[in-house]
Amino acid sequence: MHRPSSRGYTLIELLLVIVILGISMSLIVVNLARDNGTRLEEDARHVALLLQHAQEEALLGGRALAWTATAEGYGFSRRERGRNWVPVVGPDPLAARKWSAGALVSRVSVAGAPLALGEPLVFLPSGVNLPYEVRLSAGEWRISVAGDAAGRVRVSRAGKLEVASR
Image (cartoon, rainbow, N blue to C red; front, side, top):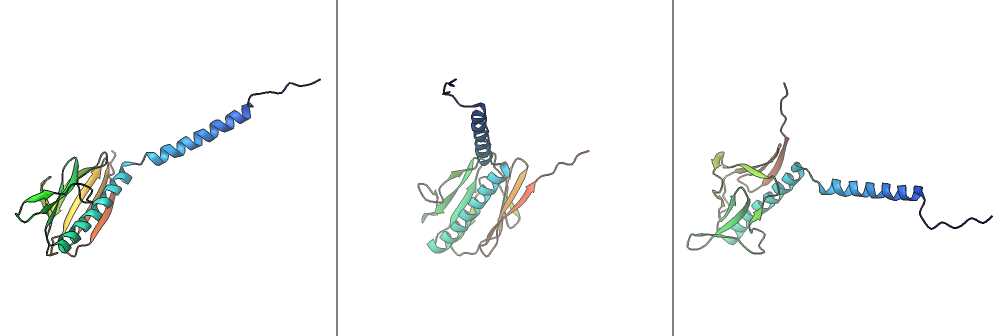
């Protein structure tokens, strides 16, 4: 008796393909779905690098730079000879940017005194700047970007706010 050849896949082969696809999809979703804390930390580190760059550019370029944060994003301005602030635009690394989804500026302060949202944080060409702090939040996460008088900038993650249960 001759057995006809089959042209389909066996149930085991189909199940194996489904398992492999399932594992692949779960890895993709895990990598794409970063939590608020991770996105906020990336924003904070990026802001810290740009603030340090702005301090150095003000010192080396001989003209003041200012960082301004809004609810939507942040940007830098350069002080021109006429004493006017001109926003940085174009491909410049200091050009305006938007916050990642969910990120908020909860406080900006200079030497402990709070600045209003939209009020500039100024970096002087003398290189003498007051210490400052920018606090960012996203959901329950809090991160601080702080600069000292020597020009060092650090990022510290306060972590997730814990809600006391009764």
